[in-house]
Image (cartoon, rainbow, N blue to C red; front, side, top):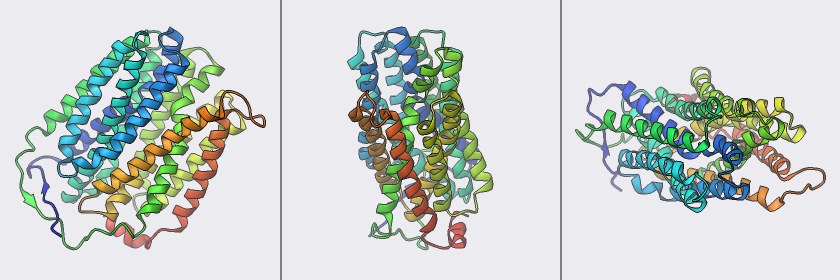
Length: 406
């Protein structure tokens, strides 16, 4: 079967432009499109512009949208850069729309906008990974691929800092400010890559044939789905849980910047100190450490434990994302978009099941634990199980995988 041609940038385009565009793209798509609602929900509840039930609908709509985006992301396999531009401008528009819908009179519209933001953020993650990693590999700089994922942590930290320092403002104003930031980021990426249309057609190297779906892809997809389930409760409810302990937004709002800062620094550390490790081992280490983070709220919901949870989960979820997506590209080096999309679908299903389990367990206590504690306990067990499997089943020798990464 003929391998589809690829579009590559002009030879004189600097590598730093590819990396910086990927960082900004993921900061906009994930920091704003995917996670902006997490630090703003407590403030909207404070302002009385959103009820707890409406907030749950907004969050669920974003999860469902992310799932739909993952299911449809493969349509951009032939031109992931086009999907990236569409996704980023979509995030900007729906975030600006949320500033109007967040005024308290358009809750249903707000849920629809957050659903659309979920679709766009999934497209952006898949397209950025597919385009950016492949572009760097063709330029003999695959080791720089990890730096792209710093953007997720930076985006979360920036949004968290904005909500933390601007927490005295109405949440509606913060939505507007985030929409303007998203617009600036989308324009930045578009302008940086606008003349990338000067292309040549190349065929992928014949020495790296794609593996078939029978060669162990399904277990990886399942592990990635469990990762989505494991991180979602802290990623959704951490500021709200902290608000139950301290009502001051300058205190409870600090948990989300910590989450983002840990995410950004962990990617830098993993790229520097774990670059020679097999990707499965890196993923396993991240998943096991995340399990420790989800276990802390089971033991206690004291503020120190929630802060430690933010660091442990925030400091591992992007390392797991990076390692999982890089592993997908190792499996299908010529065109990983389809496998990336399947893994993102599993992730989206997992993160949807987390809040659904919280809702199913209800507001009461079961055996002394509330719904959040039970869900964190389930996440801890599943994360530990998959971490052990990933660590033991490396699939090939470390030297082989290291050679591939280089």
